[in-house]
Image 1 (cartoon, one colour):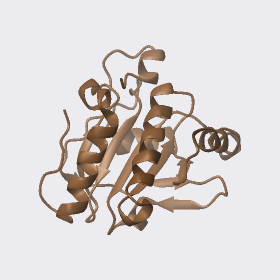
Image 2 (cartoon, rainbow, N blue to C red):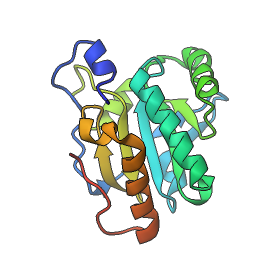
Image 3 (cartoon, one colour):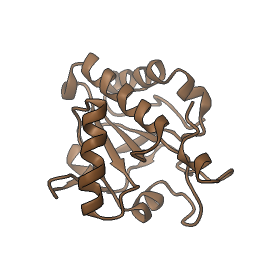
Image 4 (cartoon, helix red, strand yellow):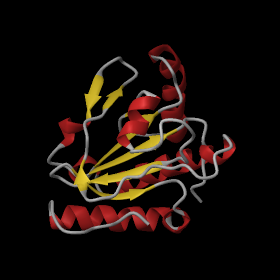
Length: 184
């Protein structure tokens, strides 16, 4: 189930407020090399974006499932998974935490870090308080957020792999328009 770090941090009510469909705002993910990856770079592809904490077991499971689906569906030909960790506070911390996360889970897709404030703003979450993780966002080829599943969405995360495949396959098949998933 998806009740990740928010519960561990004492939050009982707060979570992101994204209401798809809506254009995905720009997001900067800093990779371990220091390169800044822009979400807009992936326009034209279906993107699955996971906001995560490197220490959250639910985030680790979600990332592992994303890797399995990514591999099973033929890699970048089908969709582009991205990971954005918010728990490192600096690039130096990220350079210690993110590579271990990637290595331990055998991830073959970009995982970097983003500033907590930027992530909360992107997720339309309260700036004070905690957010449950993972936060999983599905973006179509036109850059429109089509489905959003916060860590509190137990129905989605109970059958995480099956649900993830269903949403991704729907977005890939339809191209870029029409409903494929929704916030629960």
